[in-house]
Length: 145
Figure 1 (cartoon, rainbow, N blue to C red):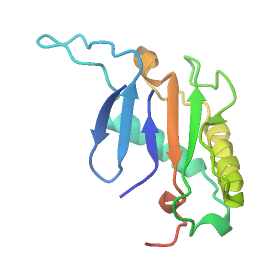
Figure 2: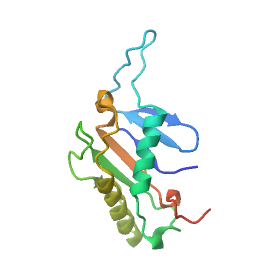
Figure 3: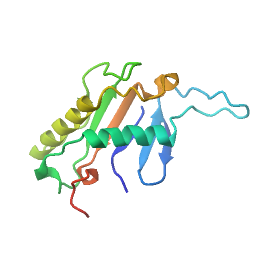
Figure 4: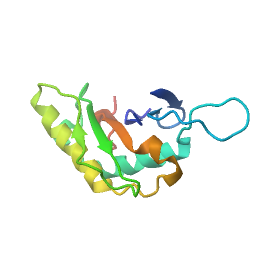
C-alpha cells in the first residue's frame, strides 16, 4: 500500500486501489450533475496520475531508504498552467538530522516535476493548493517492511 499521499487543501475523499491517496477540496464547489449536490473532486485517475508523476521525480537519498516515521509534508501552490505559483514549502518539522535531507529531496521532486499541465483546468480550484506527504517507506527503492 502506498504511503505517498496528497491533500488538495476540507472534504476527504479516500481513493482505494493500488495507491492510497486522500484529497481535500478548498472550495467545496458543487458539481453540475442533477440530483443532490456534492463537492467537486478530482477523479481517482487524476489523483493517481499526479501521485505517480511526483513519485517518479522523487530521488530519496540512499541513507534514508530504511527510514521509519520520517514523513515530510510539502505545500505546493500552483498557477492555472500547472507551474509553481511560489516555491514549495515544507510545512512540518522534525529535530532529527535525517529530516532535513528528506525535506530537501521532497522539495526537489516537486521542482523537477512541474509543470503539472495534465491537471484539468476546469478543476483548478481543487488543485491550486496541494499538500503532499512524502514517506520514505513509499519510495520505490525503500527496503520492504
